[in-house]
Length: 122
Image (cartoon, rainbow, N blue to C red; front, side, top):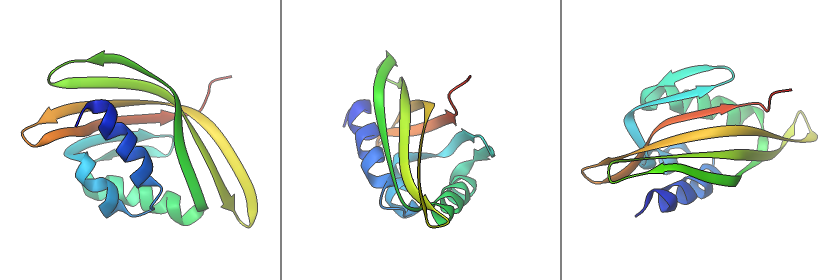
């Protein structure tokens, strides 16, 4: 599996809204930065995901405008626009932001080691 394959799989698995579906794609020591905090390791990242899924019913998440800024034998990094649609308090909502994902090649394949999602400035 290439870094590109892993990120595509992550994009589809995240829409299952089950952390066990994405956990195998994330390194145990991963660091995720979101607008509401920094999360290190599976337990903290899982909690952040579960809070988001609980607050956003029927959320659909996808990536666009992917730009692989570095791809090597042991590490790769991609910047992109993330998009989402959901129901919040019974109202349809949607949004966009920008993201960065860093992947590391481990003994058994590629894993996400860092994700940074934030709003669009301005």
